[in-house]
Amino acid sequence: MNRLTDLLGTALPLIQAPMAGVQGAALALAAGRAGALGSLPCAMLAPEAMRQELQRLAASGLPYNVNFFCHAPPTPDAAREAAWRAALAPYHAEIGLDLATIAAGPGRLPFGTAAAEVLEAFRPRVVSFHFGLPAPELLARVKAWGAVVLASATTVDEARWLEANGADAVIAQGLEAGGHRGHFLSDDLTRQSGTFALLPQVKAAVRVPVIAAGGIADAAGVRAAMALGADGVQVGTAYLCSDEATTSALHRAALQSEAARHTQLTTLFTGRPARGIVNRAMRELGALNPAAPAFPLATAAIAPLRAHWEAQGRGDFTPLWSGQNASGCLSASAAAITAALAEGFSPGL
Image 1 (cartoon, one colour):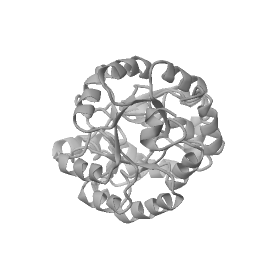
Image 2 (tube, one colour):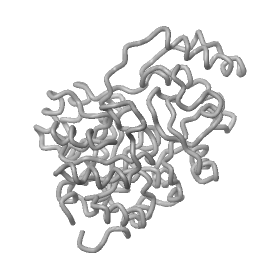
Image 3 (cartoon, helix red, strand yellow):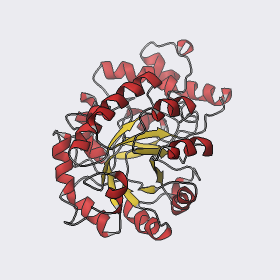
């Protein structure tokens, strides 16, 4: 036990990272029963779907984390959308798709009043945010029912901002982490650091507990993070091939192949930098193509390409999210993965 487990109400200072699109309540429950804090990603859930998942979690009696994005909805840019569709046009033509029939759409909504209303009925112990924090009135509503608030920081400045604006603990997200970068004060990727460079700097800069995330895939990684002063760790990629994850067979195969050794940040699939395994789209279009519309508007035009090639058993246009260290992606139960990670915690934590 340490101050993080006291805050989270868990046996272990370990958080199963929320991973939208590849998990639901089943993974969160399995990790929670094994002593970690299970997480439910809600960025892609409509209110009724969220309610159903929360009912499963609440019935367990376990503490759990509910995660949301906090991005500002973008202003549609017709010129940029046109440039993006022009870049994708040859790929649509290759498979006989008509771009004109594809409607634009947001794909992911930020935390708002509707989500808060659903959430308030369940009053989860932990609520976490990516891309900063929600509007002050929404954050106050969450904290009013006693929720512990976590948020991701990718720089020391972001960690200080989060502490000053109400976060009860900071997740120090290193550059190795899979999925979306949590940056919100600057889009300059040169300001991003690896986990073990970022962690001690954040630890020295804030008073709240600091959770290390990014590149931690086994007990040795956990031990190293704790040695550098982390109050706990958050692990995502190592759970992607767990029995309880909903990760597709195509994605699982990529994670357990040599291809997983080559990952890159890309804006192609959503419009915001996120780390995934390099594939045809990233190689041919350029992983950080400036034509990609602002998050999350890039998703609509590329989604039909993803669907077509996935039907052929290929991940050419699929976001194969992964951290830089996929060595822990084992085909095993979440309980077994959690137990293996827990070996990195020293007795008495």
